[in-house]
Length: 198
Image 1 (cartoon, one colour):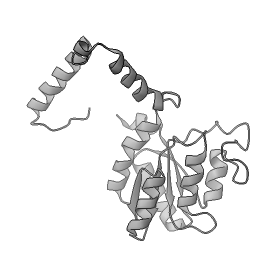
Image 2 (cartoon, one colour; image 1 turned 180 degrees about the vertical axis):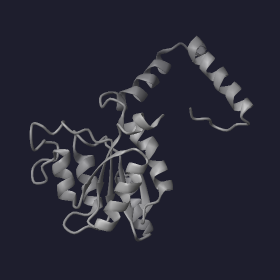
Image 3 (cartoon, helix red, strand yellow; image 1 turned 90 degrees about the vertical axis):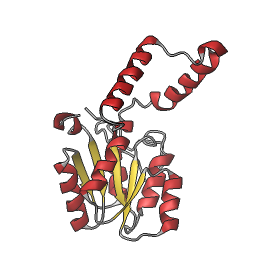
């Protein structure tokens, strides 16, 4: 995917440290992401259109869908609302729960990392953020591009389709999938098993 395509991805960066916030912003913009940076969890919720004091599934204004966010990256330790609290608010919201969230921290605390991942964080990065970390964001951002209604239904409908087929047909693939697989196999043999991203 080229620069123009990547620039459509919008990342909300949340960090109370201006130095870290500017670094994250620069790294993301260098990788052609659109970035909105805020300095607190409450400002992040406000930007997402979630009312911090009301039910987290209720939008705080009718214009909350105006800005599409493909990923939230947040510091763990912040005054007021921690990154973990922000993660929980996003995952509890029926409107926002499908937005991928990445947590960062300058402290490598295994129990903290485990807790964030169990709560639904996609990744946990150690600060300062590096360009190699930005590369890891892409699959999560791509996941956010699937229409909201389709995310859970895609896997479910595929499973139902497979289960409803007669046993003899389960092992057969449609012609186009066959072509795609043989083409993919040819590419792997040409490039010695390396995955080639075009």
